[in-house]
Amino acid sequence: MNKDDILEYLKGKIPDYSNQQRQHALQFSLYVYPFLMRGEQHPFISNLVNALFEIEEKIPGYSSKTIDWISKIKKKHFEQMIQILGEVGVLRKFSSIAKEHSIELEPRKNKGKNPEFRGILQERYISIEVKTASLFEFNDNRQTGLQITSHLDYKDYSSVKNHGKIINPLSLKVKDYLHSANEKFKDHKKNNEYVDDLCILFIIWDDYINEPLSALINPNSGLFTKKSFSADSNFENVDGVIIIRNIHQLFRNLRFGEIVDYGVKGWFDPLNFSNPSVPPIFVQNPTGKRISKKIFERFNAFETDIFTKMPIAEYRPTDFVDWKTGISVSGLYSVPSDLREIVLEYFIRNNSSHLWRSYSDIALFGNIDVERIYESAIENNEDSPLDYALETIKTTLRMQQQIQRVALEENAVVDTRRVNLNNQFRLHYHLNKMTGPSQDCPCNSGVTYKECCSKKLRHFHYTNYSDI
Picture 1 (cartoon, rainbow, N blue to C red):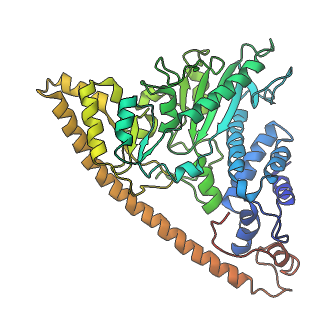
Picture 2 (picture 1 turned 180 degrees about the vertical axis):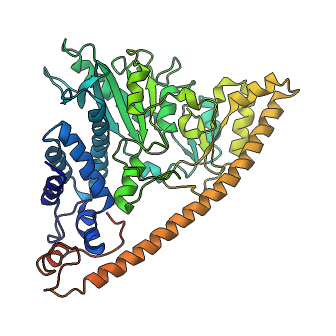
Picture 3 (picture 1 turned 90 degrees about the horizontal axis):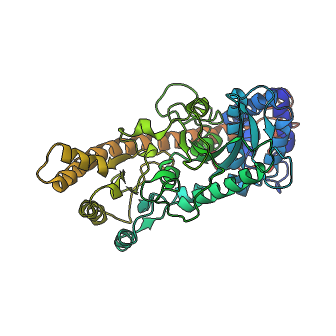
């Protein structure tokens, strides 16, 4: 199938608005957007077709199979489609770097569970499982209190909970992903042909990847550490995890036709695995087979070590995030208990259940590494390391507040632009609806309006352009 074939197959499977009983998340982008924009294809549809085409060239038949899968998902369950798109993004990348004709979908030699893909990379067989997180409800809630991103000691947790609203971590979700992948890889490797495979779990998250990263390697509770919060945390069949931060990019592209470029010039396709400005992270499972740098770097992934000295919260295993100040804290359990108590008390005292949101889907917050601050105090022979640490934290918070003011201003610009765009689209829609029956259809299909969009959009009622 070429790109035109894929697009036509997609249209054949996704209903238009001629039947009001059938609803799908892709209806607007497939049928209304071209009507508004004189035949122009919606950016998300272009990206989807491009991604499927690139995979189709390597794995014939994949496009129709995936479109069939997507077409069965009802509009109200569109998040399931995002989960499928997570797999599409990973397979698109894998098929571009794996040995030609080596990829096998859902490899199976016997009864039991199996991973999504298997192929040869760097002369090694790689088996891949993909888990795309369901986060839309959580995204609406994560900035409404003090967000715990690790497992605090019971005393500390109780103290924080008693002084304001807290948002609990998603570490159990990450544990479930690991457990599921471990069982699949375990069944998979019962066959002698697969026993030496390197097995990688891909976790597709939104921009806040400090959350799964903390669940895995927070030194006080991470599932891949000796202090794991779970007694059952071996997961020996999962050799490593790659975390990708692009659910929000997929959603924004689908809903608004926008690209999250992080201020870098260029057009980044959210189905092209990852934005180069926000690379994926690789985490080695200490109980699994060692995955070489040559392999995970082919997936554009980095280890967390390169971010150790940078105050970039997203790439740090954090302990909690204070959304009132827009700052995260890490290293809480690597310092003396009296300093930990001072830090917690400071944030508790300033906590509030009435918080503003910096961004609804973009992680723009700083990080305070309490351990590094304390080490600096000791190295500089400070008379009172605890006082020095607290003053450093206060200074960092003041700086962060300046950054957050800029973030709010930028967010207001985005909201204004969307309102203006929506007004333009509404005007275009009503103007185009005035087209005469025998006139050319505004979608530039080459046939009359009566025979084209007048039928296709019969039961469409314009609310706003982002109403998927």
